[in-house]
Image 1 (cartoon, rainbow, N blue to C red):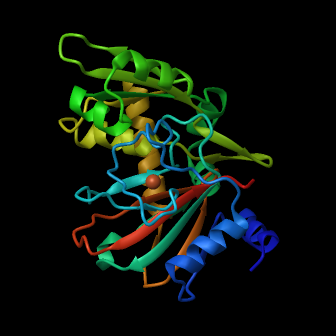
Image 2: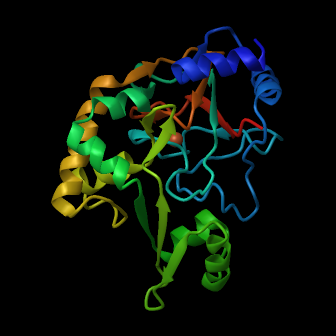
Length: 279
Ligand SMILES: [Fe+2]
């Protein structure tokens, strides 16, 4: 399958699933042939910067485990890295070396259909207020671990290069970061809803004890909450699942198609991910 065909299928569907029996080498070769630049793990990894607990696979510094070592929690639908990257990857490449349980399928949802299924009021509001701010809170030991940096002044400089604002709390060493990112991406004459609103919003509403991090958008807190609940309800109805089989590969258009994951309890699951630009 050549680059042109992959591009055409992704433009039409936003996702491509291949059930041939690929090996990890085939996966790397295929993604190398079609993708452009890949996001690599850096020593001080400002680009990844999440706390997903991903680890690298093999020598190639751009193949990661999709599941953290112990973080098997359900992940609501999202676009990858919209919460703190000015240039989120165009493509996500998934490969299954070892399936886990049926409940830990990867979810996906077309962001264009999702946008077009929202109420006219929400659509109009989002188009004219197309920006969310992600506020993240990290205690000292957490940020030092996820960024691989110990000095808050150094971290502030590194983050500012990616337009992430940072506030350091000298009393306990914790930090707050803030990052502005679009909620919608233009797709022809319409829009795709693709961002990190649902993971932040679902946690805020349903699991408020888990984190202080939050997303800011909407006229006020009540308006934000009602939009999050509406978006979640519509997204739940539109979500499709990839039930992994050994050797399966999937490509997701990260400028259009949201992805997420069910709860992982079988840590034998080996689903790997690469993130790339088109060129
Ligand atoms: Fe993700």
